[in-house]
Length: 466
Image (cartoon, rainbow, N blue to C red; front, top):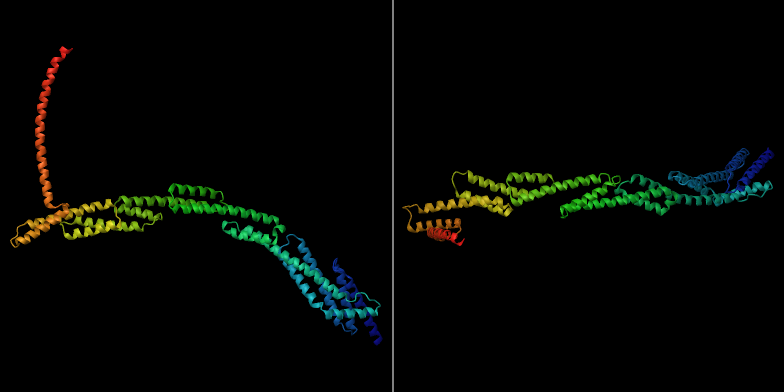
């Protein structure tokens, strides 16, 4: 009946008003989640009764949603507080708590609008007016704002803490991964970022361990730089003994940091040994190029020097010139008769070898051979000019003799006339020296006879003086 329906409406409204009064009475601090859940259950039951009594429950459902949102906000705030209380708490757990709190804050912000708050307050006011109570008017909106403010404060603190947590985790990861000298810039960047956000207060042990590792890596990097500088000094034109001693000292120092400089000392020792071998090979090759040696020996020295890493391009060019010169000399020696082409070919190879830097000791046999060939050519020309020929005129014969004499003078280095005069003067000097020797022999014999007669007279006078 209508009276029964009205009674049902009144009882449902009274139950809803009682639940709303319990909701607004609960404070934000010291929140009792169990009591809050009971209030929500009571309100949901009252809404169901009102639906059965054909009463509009739209506004009541909004109130239920607000209560549920505030309950979720309280749970999210409690979870975020518990996460922030742990030091450190881990960026993953803190990020999950922050995401939950943000979702709860967004839910409260979407539900506690002025229209919904005023309508809910009006419904609560009318319900409680019928039951003779005025408590809790406008309490829903005030509670939602309080929860929203509490979440905003915690979210700000949580985001700052999340940055510090991430810096601590990055520092811990850097201390585990960056154990080499090459990783020192990355480790320094991680330490700088941790110091910037204050991570040394949250994780002092990890910060101290990373700082100690940075100090050790800095010292190891300094040792590595000294080793590299000493190795560069090997090819910088310094004295061999001084450079080798500097590298040896740097290797001994690097061996003390083998943990942070793995393999550096052994690689430097291998480089030093290779440098010593290449220096010895280079010295041998330079001595051979300066003093001269056979083509076979020079080829072996070039091969050894190239294997040791010495630049041998210039030595190969000299070897090629020397081989060409030796081949030309061998061709002259093997020839059965003399030809002017052999003389020209040997002279060209000798000139090229001189300009190419072949050692003088290698060039000297070629010069002697070339001089011998020139003498043979001059002799043949002179013999041909002296041979009587009926088909030559006097002028032609004089011209041929003059050309032959010019060749002879070129070979001997002095004019033929001066050479003949020098030879005649030498023969006269020899004859004069022979005559003076005979005269000196005669004078010496006479002097010896005089000395023998004087000695006999002295021997006779000696007993009288005694």
